[in-house]
Image (cartoon, rainbow, N blue to C red):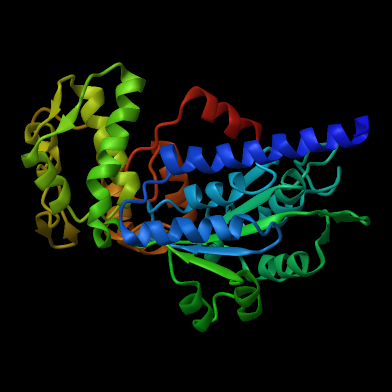
Length: 365
């Protein structure tokens, strides 16, 4: 065998080994597939990952792990070292969506970078682009996205030269895209183009078999992070965990376990550690003539804390639907998005905790 053939074989073995390690890593450390439903999803993920150019639609409630599923598809593919880029369609002002997706040339608009900027499609070239909250994408941007999916090329904002890309597009939505299409808020042709392969993630309350294994996974994870020594979950604590509705799904469960291990150190996670789950304030505050009223206590309050708590309640009550949560609070959706970012809240109302590495990655995007 000549040197070129030997190099090719070694390269193939390296890629195959990386592919197999990626599958095992996600299966062992990232994707808990105890229930039949999640096991079936994992098998579907493995089949989809083998076809690099198939478009995927992932649907599921807030906190069910749609981004994790997208990561699984990407890292189990044949190019796990390629870029994995995400764009939250609902968190970008409508006037900036196109420049975020496709980039812009220098001098295209006031306030832009002098040398222009790459968009998410260019950043993801050769890899995967996750379009989260795809249902929030403005109709004009939907039209241009459809063209890119069909032609694999686009123009930067203000540009005259077409840019070709090789990108797997994964779209995610916390609401039924089919229903959104029927209501006229989403293009029908784009829906069919995205819905080549669909993964529907059931909420945690519909796969209770996963609750304890997921809890134990996060106990192990946060033991390592915080230097704790929790080894098991008591039967009473398990009953509490299994009885909760988990409106925030896996993300909410993760945050609960993290809160327990951050605050205490024991051998067993007991019912007492979960007492805060039952100590929520009543959902119906005292009603006044012009809506509800809040009585200021003698010791005073911290206004930001009250605002943060109300926003968290609205996001949980709306199931992560920002438009509905905005109506609950009587504010605009852009204001709500700003407040969520300001107070570090996720779509299910729980706190988002970023590591220094994650903050650096976000700042660099």
